[in-house]
Each structure stands twice: as C-alpha cells, then as structure tokens.
Image (tube, rainbow, N blue to C red; front, top):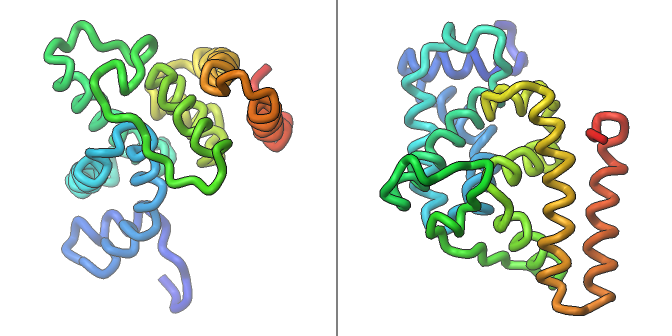
Length: 209
C-alpha cells in the first residue's frame, strides 16, 4: 500500500487480526458510531455492551469468509445476530421471539430516550422502536445508513424481494405508529409525515414502491 492510501475495511480487519492494534482501532473508529446507533435505537440500556460484543465477534472473523458480501453488510449482520441473541434471552423462550412480528420493547427492552430538541425527533425515534425488529432494521439501514436493498438482504439473510416488502410495509406501519404517538396534534402529525415523505423522496429511484 502506497503512502497516503486509505486501507479498505477488509485490509484493516486482516491487519487487526494480525495484531496491528493501530489499524484495528482505525476500523473500530470508522464504524463505531453506526453500530452504536444501531443498538441505541432498539435496546438503549445495553447498546454499549452489544456494540462491544459485535466488534469482538468481528475480530474473530477471517476476512476470507466475507466472500463477495460487502463489509458493512457483514458487520450489521453480526450486529443483528447479537441483538437477536439478546432479545431471545430476555424472552426466555427462543421459539416465541420473531423479529418479523416482535418489536424490541415486546421482548422487554427499555424505551428509547431520545435526547431531542424537538418533539418531532422524539416521537419518530419512539415510533421506529415500536416496529417489529426486522422492519426497524430495514428502514434504518436504508434511510440512515444509505445501504442498498441487496446489502440489507445480506444483513437480514432474506431475499431481495422480501426486503423491498419490508421497506414498503415498514413505512406504512411507521405512519400508523406516528399517528398513535402524535396524540391528536395535527401540527405534529403533519410535520412527522412530511419528514417521512422527505426520506422517501431523498431515496429517489432506490425507494421501494
């Protein structure tokens, strides 16, 4: 690698596994905010521990196992697995928890405590957390992390067509949660629905119908 080149994530992971703590820390710093946010919006009280366990699991990964899977998709796939293990342990019955029907609070997770200057941000954060986990993950990865549908399919281990359906139905469910939380405030409801529409518009042609 030439001086001044920026190593890609796979190279950083390989160096980290080889004992280069400096490059390992570079990889950590590159993704820590996104992974931490992934957990804060679902299980805020355990976000720090689950973020650490995600990177510990990543450090054990042989980069050769990534294959053609994009690095971030693999990383968030690990994060999702850590999340599901935690939620299933909380329900004390693996067979009951279904990420397509259960939200994080359904499994006993604490509500998000969004530090928001605007009520709009607080309500949106709460509405997202009330969605079934895989719907919430799909929406957040698509709109917050700007991941492609194919990448999200890798994260959730589901077909691309299923991801498009999750995104479309997830937006509909999010509108319903927003209406429930707006508590009759037409101004707040209009503002939140407008924000949702801006997400969709900003996604352009990539937004599922």
